Image: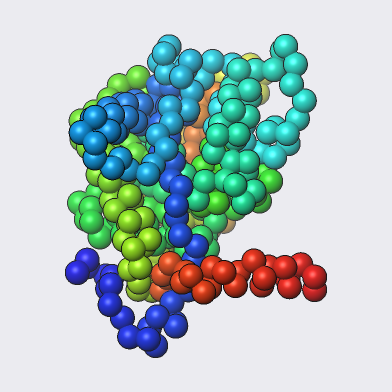
Length: 345
């Protein structure tokens, strides 16, 4: 018996649970940013383990392992021409290509062909894209949905299995067409973001947390596919509200302040109006002038200097996640007819 889940339930409880399609195809991706090394080394390690299993004639995991941006990984750079993890909008995936098309845009279309196409029935069922942050964020799921019951249940499962790791569920309220990251290609998907870890460096504790997170995620998929019914849960969801840039010189555009010491490393600690926000290089404290308390995250993220983001702010709310189970054969056979009826209406 796994804590919080039960394999054998009464018929009433089975009927109450939401039936969702089986997760037959899962992808674990690393190196979308070539200098975020936990994901790079973990995918390489999983590929090695998969090869050893095949040589022993053991059945390998039915998981696609993808090194997303091999050129950037080779050079230990975030990207070569442009940020790959901003190249997966519908417009960018389906636009024209030429000799001047950036490498990452071409690569995004290759990945879309491999794992998608995005928004199609052929897309993989679940994508877990591995990332590191220099911010003190613990382990975060970053998604585009606050009602994807699969991702929310996986998140709660990891919280139970890894109680010593701080975990948060971050929601970017962006439409499917405008969602821009690799995980949006799958029917379900999330970025697993873990930090703090400097870019171009791997820390054993961060790598180990990521490896455990991926293993527990795959365990959850196996449990779900085998018929386990997962109880209803409450999940704290942090929905991104806005980004804040560093204070800048009006004439030169140069940054003139750093994140205030009282805010640094305090990701997800509530920021109130008039709390210290920045400290100028001349020593002046600049305060948060927002009208409501919000939760900061990606505080002083190294990679976001180029994006003019000093930190992001989110609202927190509690989301009720219903009990779920895998669909029965009867439900799966009836689904296409139900979809056809809905389309006719």
